[in-house]
Amino acid sequence: MAKYPRVRDQHIAVFGQSGSGKTVLISSFFGRTQEGSYKNDLWDLVADDTGQGNRLYQNYLGMRDNATAPMTNRFASTTYYFSLKLKGAELDAAKKRPFDVLRLAWHDYPGDWFEEEPTGAEERQRRTDTFRSLLKSDVALLLVDGQKLLDYRGQEERYLKSVLGNFRQNLLRLKDELLDGGGRLIEFPRIWILSLSKADLLPGMDVHAFRDLVILKAADEVESLRSAIQQLIDTPDALAIGDDFMLLSSAKFELASDASSPIEIDLNRRIGVDLVLPVASMLPLERRVQWQSKLSIPMKVLDSLADGAELLAEGLAGGRFALVDKALSRLSKLPKASKTAKVAAMALPALTEAVKLAGPRLREINEQARHQHDYLRATLTQLKMDLEQGVEDDVIRKAK
Image (cartoon, rainbow, N blue to C red; front, side, top):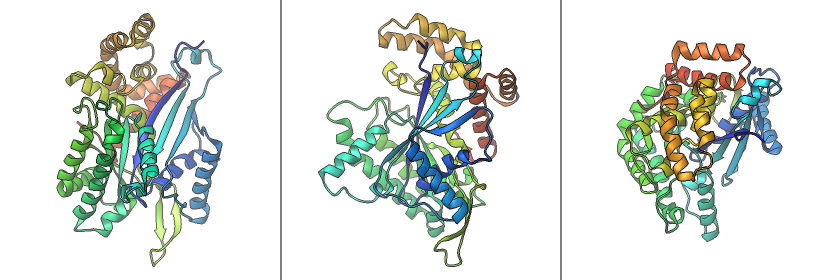
């Protein structure tokens, strides 16, 4: 029997109004990895549901070959599961790694639910159930539509206040159902990244300019949204919103003269799409270390925050963190609360050192792992390097 679960799940939730580009985003994210020309020497990405995968790839091919944007199902809520399967499973070294598959659960929340009231009790319950399904996510992307910013040029606050205000109102409407007479939620997305979709439409705007625009035009709405979320969660200080920003563009769309439809879609000209995996896997680990170092976080919250962080750190930094491995084994028979507290205390120095890996040292470890055919360590260090590069390229801005 495997010592650890062989699958490590990471969850990400994507929110955006209708037309903000969610369907194109996920189709571009998955479809690129399915082309015959795509090469990756560390892992393969597969859709756990073949039907979902085929539909997404069909969307991708329609954009690539026919310049046809995918149709959207306005009121459909879907969770997509993608498995990043590490190569080298036949090697002896693979038997020692803590997991073989990093699975991404991508929760897509219907855009029209931002803007329209539920038609009755049944739909209201469906919205609540859908929201509950994404509470395992550590990271949420809240999309700001680049086309809408262009439409409201000079009056961007009108759009920004609308999108942030509508989302806040939806959360407040769901509050009673989500709490259901109990205490505040322990498991809830704690990292909210304001993400500029269709960023290719604003080529002069880097992530810092986007952040400045949001703060200048809608700082009060960001704070109101933070306050609404804090009403829902245990340990409200362990929340980041208005701290992290990101640029996203699924493709470069060349529109007809009447701007009614695309005549060419260049899927090779993407921004930020390849950062989704690094953000979902690495950012929660980093934020957990930051918060655990400066906040007094109850163990029940810490246990749900960046769940599996010790395993990610072990895979990221290899045998140097055998202490975590031994701690998990030695404390496995203790009651859960006691076990969590002890493991968390023992693991913090190891997690901190893993998070601090950066620059030349990180590249050195990645090269060493590749040479040694340590596919897990090579993959995780590559994801960390990709996130680091995204910061350097001004595509993502992380909280300081």
